[in-house]
Image (cartoon, rainbow, N blue to C red; front, side):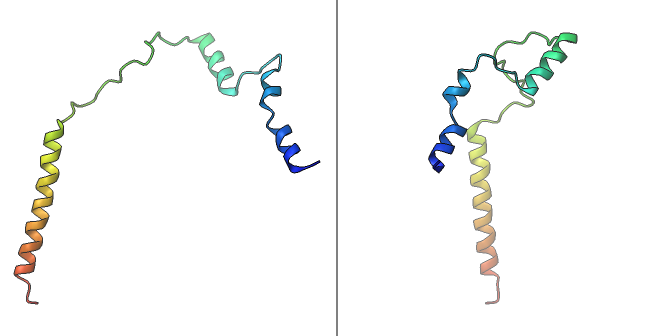
Length: 85
């Protein structure tokens, strides 16, 4: 047998998908057992996450970044002017 035949047999998805009985994953079995005793509360599909803090607007972030860049440039210029070399 060639290596290609082994590869095709190992990853034959059509054969796996045509199986009559499919066993659920371990996580699915665990959740099913847990939910029998204590079912989850109903939740809307893709509910909006609760925000912890309001977001700052983009212009404030831009001003902060540009201010830091200007401060670094001024600091480097000052240090270069007062250096003995």
